[in-house]
Figure 1 (tube, rainbow, N blue to C red):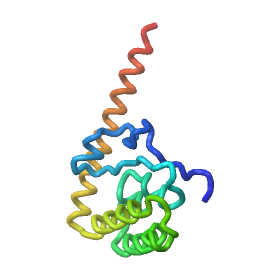
Figure 2: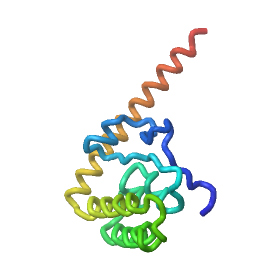
Figure 3: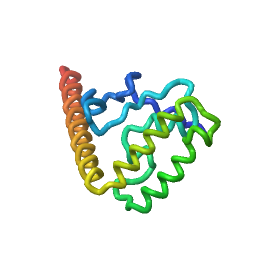
Amino acid sequence: GGGGEDSRGAGGDGSGGWGADDVANGGPLLSTAVPMDASGEVARVLGCRDYYAVLEVPVTADAEEVKKSYRTKLLLVHPDKNGGAPHSNEAFDRVKHANSTLSNQEERRRYTGMLSEVHMRHREASAAAAAEKSEAGSGG
């Protein structure tokens, strides 16, 4: 692969600056902590923040696109197909969960709604932090 394989989130804890509840406790975001010995597609999958990123499909993807991407990704991270690469089991499970969530219409609708809500909260928090920073800097 070329250059951009290190997709760890900012902050080093795998949260990328997102709230812990958004990642844990049934939140829609995935931990982006990538073990140092993971590489290639396994590292990419483990560094993904959500199921759409795991399967590399847009939110607008239809069932066929999801299925096609799932099959491709599953082969790339399959523990038996890639020589038992470190952490391929976790990546394999993540790809399977992504597919089961995004291929079920009801689960997908719920998941996408939660994801939108989290992104909206994150944008609001970022905007508030930026406004606070600019007010602090304009003391003249």
